[in-house]
Length: 322
Image (cartoon, rainbow, N blue to C red; front, top):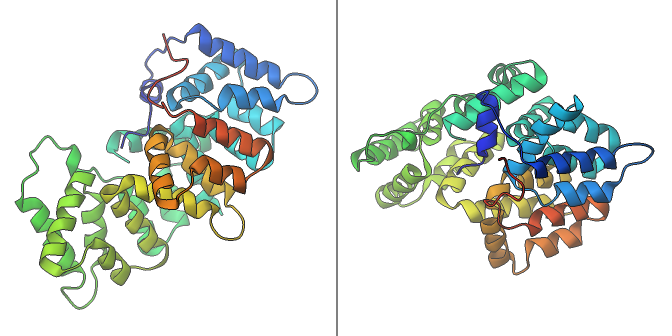
């Protein structure tokens, strides 16, 4: 699952980026909307809401070049509440947005993406992401997060995916869990996090064949709390990504009150795959995601979310670089 646009890698690898006139025009519109007394929220929604992840990143980089201030800082000073939070995420590059969410979550992906995320985190907060995770988290959950920040999916290897390796991993998980007295949590964590979606599917099939149940029950029996939720999410995204992400968004709006922070973070992070997620959501819940958002949110926040969900062709940049 490729969540980071090409511009994010170009920026953090310090490659020269050439911006189109449309990117400059969008920056001028944003600047004008925040200039003087009062903020033109409608213009901000209309300009930023429909953008692809790549265009959002390009505008974030270009705005700071043109006006010598980070776009996020401008938006933070001009807006507030759930609308302001979502708008801040949208007007940052994807790795910066993820760093922002992680930082505030701890205070209260593939190897290339992890490296870019670490650089973005250090740039925004002047501290190492791994070190902060080690100091602010505890137990198995800390181990899961720190391993995730260092682990390379075996699926990214150039070596062929052989039948024996997933079998070996399935039995390693069994022996580390229900196959012995006591649980070797570290072995299960490392094996699962090192596995690409393709490998996870093979491990799941083998585990079911040999032990009559899947990895979900292993996690449920051997872990609890945040650790269980984190591992289950990793495995479920590998096995059934679109339904899992549809459930993530649904849960943010389920029950009494909407978790706007979780909803905003999910929409921004999984932007490139929102078309597939929306199809899965409608199939599972018999209503469209846009209709659910319309019923559970209101005001400028709702309008911004609906603009984001309206643009289904995330792979086709609307503005782009030259």
